[in-house]
Amino acid sequence: MDNSNVDLVNQYFTYFNNHDWEKMAEMYTETAAFKDPSLGMGTVTQTREQVVQKYCALNEVFPDLHDKVIQVYPSGEQHVIVEFISSGTAPDSSEFELPICTIFTIENGKIVKDFTYYDNFEE
Image (tube, rainbow, N blue to C red; front, top):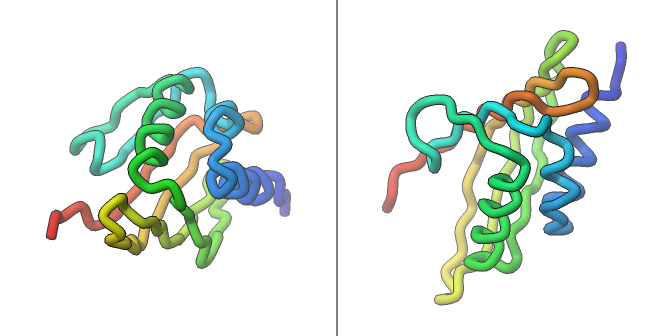
């Protein structure tokens, strides 16, 4: 089995945890399809620049933003499913831990779809 997609996803989380948003965004095609509760209910298209802006803004609120990968599930030729826990500390010292599942679709070594699922209910 070709592990290049798993390697790519592992590299993605390394960039994320290093807060290297530019390098992380370069792992996507120029425009990619996203599903993310923070972006609304449907599928939205975002550019690499929008990805960088989103995570820079998130990083400003949570300077210690971190994803802990729990399990990586390769699925077929183009998909990798990742179960992880995102955590961080807000300026008021409140901390969050959020279990997340993302399905990455990868074509020619680039992420074309990033479908992310988590509980988006505000407490």
